[in-house]
Structure formats: C-alpha cells, structure tokens
Length: 244
Image 1 (tube, rainbow, N blue to C red):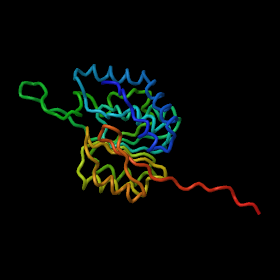
Image 2 (image 1 turned 90 degrees about the vertical axis):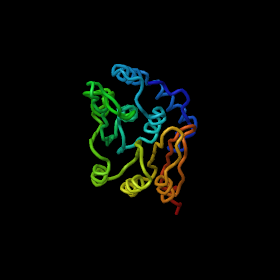
Image 3 (image 1 turned 60 degrees about the vertical axis):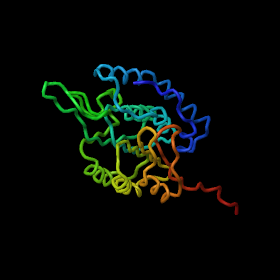
Image 4 (image 1 turned 135 degrees about the vertical axis):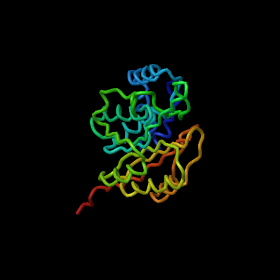
C-alpha cells in the first residue's frame, strides 16, 4: 500500500455540503489515522504480493463518512477491505452507523505445477476471505454478505429502510449499474451520497449520470481519478415561524 498524498477537499465538500475548511479538517483527521494505515499496509505485505487493487481515495471516504454521519452504508466490492476499513473507522469515530458490504470473492486458479496463476488484481490470497485486512476492532459495525451482487443487492434493498451512502466499487456495465442503482433510488435519503469507481481515469457511466439527473443534481469527479459521486439535495430548511 502507498499512502494517499493529495486528497481532494473540494470533492469532499461537494458531496457533503461542508465548507472547504471543514473538509480539510476531516481529511487531516483521516490522514492522522496512521495506526489504521500501518495495520493495512502490514497485512498486505504479509501476503507476499506487491499490490492489490484498492480504492484510490480512502481519505476522502473517511472524511465523507465523518462529515455526512451516515446511518446505513452500502458498499459493493470489498477485496482486501481498504475502503471498508476507512469507512468503518469513520463510523467507529461517529459512534453510529452500519456498513453493509457485498462481495463476490475472486481467487487465483491453481497451476499444474502446484502454484497459483491468473486471477484478477483483486483476487484473494489463499486461505483469506473478503475484507481480510480489516482490523477486528472495526468489525462490529460490519455486515458482510458474500455472493453475486445481482442476487444480493435486491435482498439488501428490500431489508433497508433507507440508505445514506452507496459506494459502488466494482467493474460494471451500464445496463447492470443502471438496474442496480434503481434498487436504491427511492431509498437514498435527502443529503445521501452515491459514489461509483470507474477505474483509473475512467469516464462516468450512464447509470450514475441518469440517477443524479433524476435526483436533481449532477455527479462530481474526484480530481485525477475515475471516481464520480453526487449528493442528493437535502430537504429545504424551514425558516422561523412568522410572528402573529
């Protein structure tokens, strides 16, 4: 793992409604969570691979969760659990919230010589399960469900009363993403946040653009990355009651 060196406070502010100063303070707190980073880095090094695919903006996820204070979070795609760990650390600091994660584990195939070959950049080490790098102390707020998202997302959408943050961090086709986003469109609370990762430098998928448009807003790109997100406009605040 490499530390994130240049987080984007403007993106955090756009997705939370916080000020620039508040966003920078939340990012500084996330950066100061050095114990979490060191734990994740040690866990990755211990598995003997140079790198695993991971979210490119973990500090922003932590800051968004701290500022938005979500109660119900949905994450699609886990792998070793870097994004999950940063979200769970933020929930732990908030003292509230549950992260519901869905993952279809990928494992390298055994070769004829007895070793391992192939496998994706997010494939799990032998004997490990999804989220294996997440510290145990953070797991009480974690609801992990293993299986195909096409099967599990409808079940989760039927269970949850509402959703405050959705992180969609898997390779996807427009048709699948549009259908799966539709499961949560009516569950996203006012002020709720949706983030989709389209890979390094990837463009925004049509499903996210359409959902944001139906919500009355537009997605915002994290500078330099294929991460796009939008915030559903919050309900208007009522002014003071008129004097009689």
